[in-house]
Amino acid sequence: MAQFNMEDHPHKRLNVLTGEWVLVSPHRAKRPWQGQVEKTSEEVRPEYDPKCYLCPGNERIGGHMNPQYNEPFVFVNDFSALLKDTPEGGVDEELFQAKSESGICKVICFSPRHDLTVPEMEVSEIKKVVDLWTSEYKSIGENDFVNYVQIFENKGSVMGCSNPHPHGQIWSNSTVPNEPAKKQVKMKEYFDKKGKSLLADYVAAELEKKERVLFENEHFVGLVPYWAVWPFEAMIVSKRHVTNLTELTEEEKEAFAAAYKELTVMYDNLFEVSFPYSAGIHQAPTDGEEHPEWHLHMSFYPPLLRSATVKKFMVGYEMLGTPQRDITAETSAKRLRDLSKVHYKHR
Ligand code: H2U
Image (cartoon, rainbow, N blue to C red):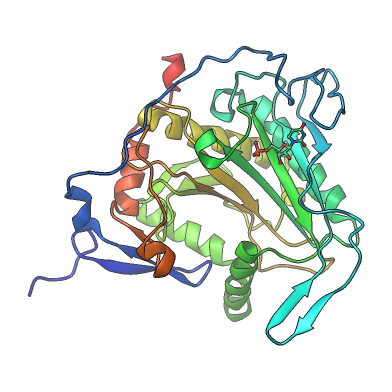
């Protein structure tokens, strides 16, 4: 029998951050595609759209007016999924459990410009988004009832994003949500055992292997994680072991902004389309405890697979069994790494 190698043979890989496995089937990457093909429509947007509820000076759906902002602007979500004054209570039967949950939800407009996206913004403008994330993480986290602050960006209509104006969201609540909770368990196990950050060790190992690294600057690394599930999944990780945004120096925040831009330019250049994704920052809970196990990082989950129109669906075996991918993380990383660093619209 032939010797096992990860470029040709089906295998599973462990996500050491969550403890979950992904099935990789590299031999299938060559099969003919008979899936869905959608039409692309690269719309040209105006700098200001009088009908956009996120543009400066416009009225939002709830009747609030946006100020004439010219830097990143944050407001409480008019349709917040979590509310401050939720009465305490729940259901505590063995088979029927419920708990009331309080929180605060906000929306952040990244830029006053309706026509921009992160990869098209200047690093200095993105740095202001990082600054606002930092101050919001701190101020929202200072509420006694807030123990986790989830910052995220949902980009593209294919991801259910309701408005192309560049924006993200912050949902915060009293308990740690499922995804960071899984990571917390694994980071803590590692930290308790080794007295070191799991992600610091992981990034150092990836920088040595180089196969999945997309880019690095002085303070951050962009890479396709070994355990990636989505075809072009990626992570931005701080080189220094910091547990949350407030520990970053000004220079590191600038480097984070530069990495955010560098990755999203790669994404846009891959299929020469404004690349959709859900991305978010995972960092220490704001529960007043020390969390030396935590290591700040941002994860990107883009749905596109083969072209601007062909996306991956997490269905079938993936819903019922284990997530699966065909193209390996190494191949994806190489494809992204080999692209021009200049945004396709600016070439
Ligand atoms: P998405 O495009 O990712 O769905 O985010 C837009 C958010 O903006 C969404 O959560 C909020 C929606 O509740 N929103 C307002 O707060 N006010 C509005 O006038 C429209 C949308």
